[in-house]
Image (cartoon, rainbow, N blue to C red):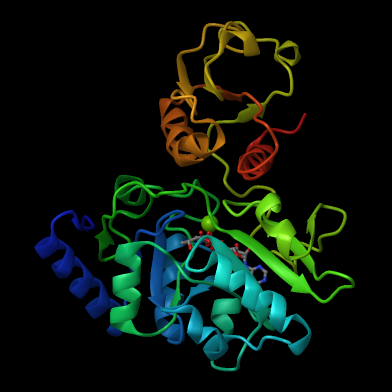
Length: 343
Ligand code: TXA
Ligand code: MG
């Protein structure tokens, strides 16, 4: 059976959609919800049987832990134990960034089921700023576990139609909240005490950037050499975010030699000729991340949509132009590197 999508544009339909979502979540079922980052596949985080349905629908391996969303930042201590040594910086960070796209990895409380954290002693937690999500979680008044609403390893959905393409018939309901405001998954950090400043480690780059976090501590990016993938960020597997079409991220246009007879499509950052990528070959399709010259934030909003659209063309290769590696560019370049073919 096809999965229904409930609209939320007009107040009466919005109230109906919120009620339906809360009803399903209370009954231990799952539902796809909009957030300000990407669409999430939600379940009552304290109900292990409900959470198990998320793993089943996504075909997600159970070693990959989920993010727990709270109704309100005041409820952090219901799911996490904040160590005394980082209490001050955690308070500063959540005052500044919650509700919003920042996820903190903290020691978990016993009430959080093992299936949520993949047996880890820590829990990843955030508060979403999406108005529809907020109404639903406040109506439920319990923490919600929600990974991105895509099949495991696939591209995150930033619209209800993208969720449908991923999970049609596998989940009972999708709530449509329009296109996601940021378009990239939340930034995930862990925090350790440090002198003179706390140490903030970015486990997954996202909308809250290194520049944003610098005020609160010494910021480091996890690199392959620092990270023990199995324990630090189990979902950050190299193959994550991959389109089905092979993708090649070029650091310079001259790195590319087209193969006769192969079909190529281009993901261009600004669509500017001076960048040198537009005329590399006869592209079957060219899609521009920032056509309005809105730069990196505009590119982020369109990033997964364009990747998904180019993937559907069924070309032999997606060619991706590089972006500036600052601000939200760091997160997009991280995803492109993970998705790209290794020579
Ligand atoms: O923006 C977002 O974060 C979206 C929306 C729906 O909130 N959610 C999301 O969830 O991107 P997901 O499952 O696609 O990515 C969550 C990632 C996991 O793959 C894992 O890397 C990390 O969060 N994670 C979760 N719990 C963790 C933990 N205890 N320690 C380290 N990393 C953890
Ligand atoms: Mg995901």
